[in-house]
Structure formats: C-alpha cells, structure tokens
Image 1 (cartoon, rainbow, N blue to C red):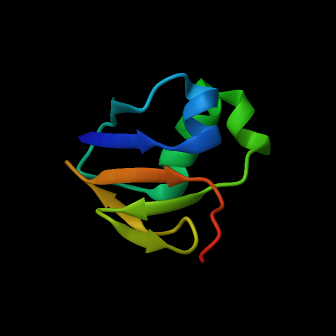
Image 2 (spheres, rainbow, N blue to C red; image 1 turned 90 degrees about the vertical axis):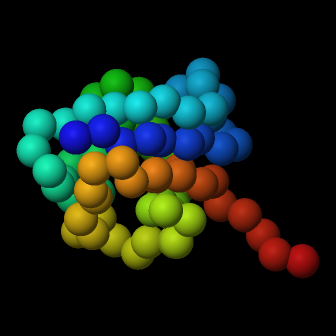
Length: 81
C-alpha cells in the first residue's frame, strides 16, 4: 500500500523534505505503524511534538486505520488568532 506524507514546520526541518510517499505491505495499517516507521527513518521526530491529519481531518490517537492512497499530514503545534 502507498501513503503520501506531508510535513510542515519543524517536522519538515527534521525530515529535510515537504512530502514523500512510503509503502507498506497489506491494505491497511494503523497510524501507530506509520509513526513507528517515521521514527525509524527520522529519529529526531521521537522528541518532536506534532499532530496527525488524515485526508485533511485532524486525528486523535494512533489506533486509527490508514488505507491505501491516504494522505497524512504531520503538523507542528499551532496557535489560533
């Protein structure tokens, strides 16, 4: 399966890219599995605070299923105003 990742702010600084595509075996994984792979590839993210959005919807927790061709954004903390 193919997942498109988009990085913003400090997350983009750590990955040194704004987006990339990653691949997994199977048709579905959890957000935790995606996060684990990201932490393996970019150890700096283990100490970085960020939130996830899947297909432009903010997600709480890491048990959410991620499906083929989903777009995941890693968002740094932000303030409204």
